[in-house]
Image 1: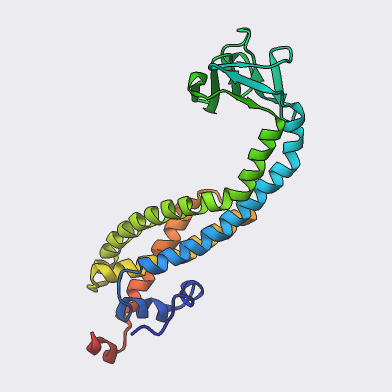
Image 2: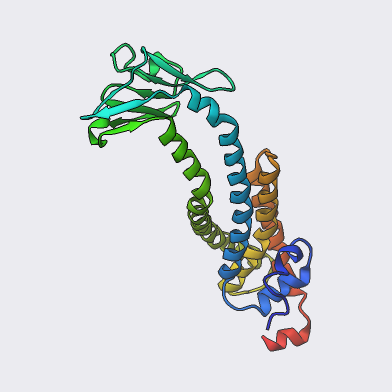
Length: 263
């Protein structure tokens, strides 16, 4: 039976040879329950910080957007505004055009403007990135009036429910990604085991892979929160995990005779 709880593993994974030995020889399962709890904790911190940043961004910038926003009427799949056109909505901070409204046919493409959103009479075009844009047909939109009050309500709803919406999706996606990663790391662990002339089964290598990845996951989490971008971070964290995995497998060799007998 393992002498370490889930809550002791994160800190001890940075330096304790005995932890790696214990995880290999005494722990049961493949370590994915611990992996889920670790990711749940890390993403809780990240999404909470992200939620606060989004709230702060809206609080700072939404008044400037709302002051510029015209009343847009969509009826029978056709958009209209009372203001003269083309009508621009600018970034309050930089003054750069973010959206343009033109139902007159003067501007029919985002290539004609620096904006990333274009509302024409029958369509809305959004620039996803420099290589891709998406166009939505307004004929699929029910008759509506989009004004500052409605937009303000949407912004407040986004602030209120952002955490609840984002957290489950990023946690599930991260968990799936990390499981695939652990399967690959354990396969590399077979090579390390062969080099060290030990023969742990695959489930043990999976447990060791999860623990060996813990320092990289924690460091990456706190770097993100601190806003620090590490050059070649993926390669660095991979190398760190491989070093811990190698040392973890090596720790099995150092097991005391009575522990070997128990195996």
